[in-house]
Image (cartoon, rainbow, N blue to C red):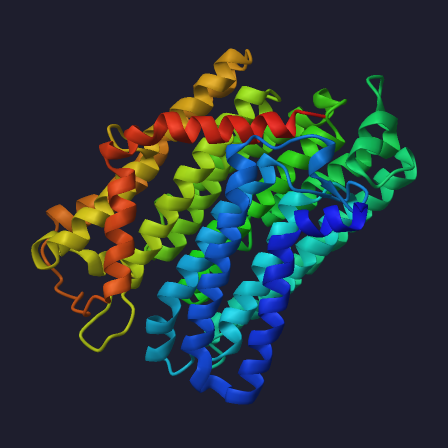
Length: 487
């Protein structure tokens, strides 16, 4: 009976696994000519898995009834919130990738399969209730991601991005494993509930503290938080743009969700130990992300530093250590995923007369005169990322700062607000180039229907109309946060 219950809770992972294996056989038999069919089937699988997660999120599922395989896996509302965003990011990647890869004659059948298996690993990550399940999910995602980063084999930048990601990712995995071994050694448990109980409310031992530091350092690499951000600009720039879209959305959600679950569930009895680390990483990410972006002339590198900057703001919510802080962080995360999708879809639409990608910010000069619709959408993304009202990106920062003030972290909120003003500079630089510089007339590419639909839908969400969804979004984020604090 327990096995049947566990299999029911892990239905989404089972569906992805079985579908992935079937599609793998299709790819083996039919070759690359079946790549688009496999992509469509993979999107359908991801949509079905997202639908499977909705009841748990809407019903605020929490507690022992959501535990599978001895609490190594948790199908609660928190994991459901993360999975919906993960599957959304993965599905968007598969929708926008074929048109891009076809221009390089690089659309192969294994691309959607890699995304599908990466999504499987990410689903396990956000549902992990044990350090071993955590690592299995993380590595399943990472192994697929290394290949995706280097997918354009004829492009030196892509090969370099894949190699850098692999080397630094392996180092981060080693750090994480060392932290896991220390945590197990000094707590005697690998399950999160056992670790929490073993650490207790007293003073942590030196060994357990080192374990905590190494675990958080390994996870900080996965979310590209400073000072473990060094891979992000090079990988974002070098990887194929659809892959960069994927990295900026789904893995970011999975890693942040995993960091929240580990901090609250495993080390929740020692908030004073990990809050200091999270506050340090938040402040450093905000500052490095803002200052690092100022000198960038490549739009994808600018988005990479923007990602580091936004991770810093999201970590402010986690630093609160409260249910309201986690809920605010999830609201920000959902908005950020849509901002990233809109931004990278717009970048995918920047192509010259020879259908080659246009990535230099200088080449966007006068875009408002030659491609006004695309310029408006890209400007909306920049203003939203900067947190300028009335665009919806403002709301994500507002709720995080509000949670910080309520948790008596007023100084942290004040520094974050000040850094937001600094960070607005490089976003406004892009808008200035598009609207006030002489037209370079470099962008001529024809728009694909899928790209246009996605960009319009995301732009509507980021517009003031997005505020109509605030009650609904806060309700779902509240359900997810309450499940995380149920223990």
